[in-house]
View 1 (cartoon, rainbow, N blue to C red):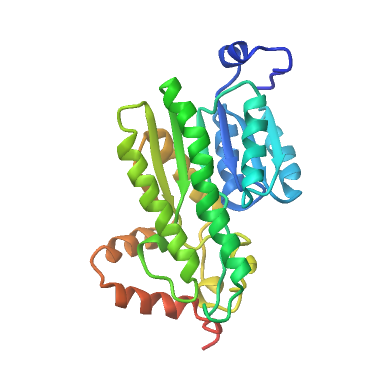
View 2 (cartoon, one colour):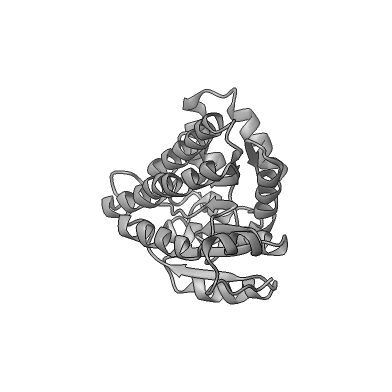
Length: 277
């Protein structure tokens, strides 16, 4: 439902507006689909991404009859996170839910990949996740309510040859989410980790992995992944392996498989040229 908060005090805005959800990395893929889930379930949404696609995403979301605030900033930069948080606070409202979803991948042999790209990956996938959580979660704790969704991956459960830095970043997010969930258990703030498998997004193109077996294999719909993530978040679950039953099976097997074996299995899927052995 559209609501003009321009003349409201923060207290008035909190009292009269729909619940507010924040989604990062929302210009496309899983992030956009998560934003749609929130919009379809009566949330106003504040969405952020570094690219101009965030404005097209906002127009799509407005079709659900909700208030949408698009913010175009680069969360891989500290000042981008700070600007986003200032814009968020300027709404005069606290987030009821946040999906910290923005992330990128870098594929290829570690000795050949771009250091700058991998440091950017760490800045976005890891550092910005911590910065955003540090800003938004204390607000939720002070109020005594909130829901937090971190997008990790089933890649968090295995070493990732030819995606070494990416897989490590997702392992960080999973561990971080599970630790925060325990810390916050008596605060009214729930934390959920979303673990998708290979999903039909722009990820593999951006990660330079188009010639890999995983990129050319059957992938899950981002809409299905987002639906699973939203349902788990609203149910207060600690994590959800989203998408097809194959992801659930892979995650289950990963719990009992030696790391060396998991690494070899991942290599077969992610090694450059594996699409056409």
